[in-house]
Image (cartoon, rainbow, N blue to C red; front, side, top):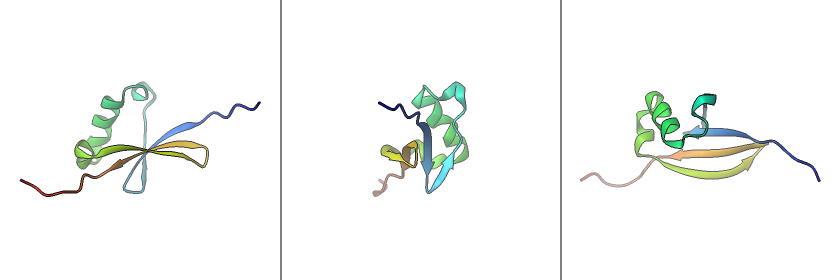
Length: 68
């Protein structure tokens, strides 16, 4: 048996975002931190994109719809 250690990667619009170690376990705090860089992340959906190239990728996908 082999154990592979995966890193967590957060991605928005094709850009890998930094994840400070002190926020790594708190998804809401991490979302707020990323929203300071990209405000639309507050309304985006977090989608588990799976394992890509040795990293567990979570993507922020913008909500698409109508206003009103």
